[in-house]
Length: 242
Image: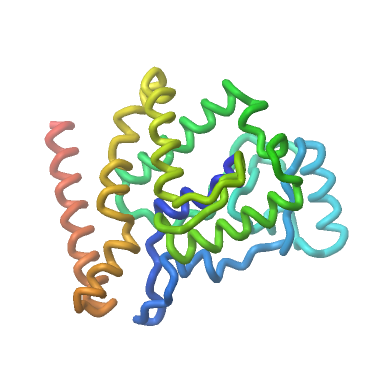
């Protein structure tokens, strides 16, 4: 489920529209050049499928070791691939604001609570697409989200309909509020409403470029703003501790 919807989290976090001081044409230049390895990774039916696939890749040499899996979402644990205890959402760009990191994480957690309550309804392998079609769909969605983030047109794995990433996120966020409140996640989700209204970091930076700033000037302002935010948080924490 996280892999099928990973482009949504890239859309929220996109923050790499520049490279070598130039606008690249992508909201996430990082994901556009991310060295996905192996080139083709299936949707795993279950843990046994994951173990067998991993062993096959190591035997074929497409992976150098058990850590050599570079994809949008990666299972992890103390003894991969046999003992897993976490999942890594690796598609996101750097999110400098810790409050927004918590907000995105809360959306992921709420979605997983929904999955646990409706496992069959939210299993992409039980949807309208074959496993191979899902792979192609997700690859296309990731590319679209890297280019246009919240304004990317994505294909919903549940229905096959095309929609804006922002619209899909708003739909998930509404459901996340309903499910997240009993789990104490509501307050953490709130900043996402602001992000959707004001745009992600890449969108805000590109807007400044369109208004006449250079990428270097945008970065300089962002550094100053981040330093100021850090000072404000330190003061707040000191007051709370005091």
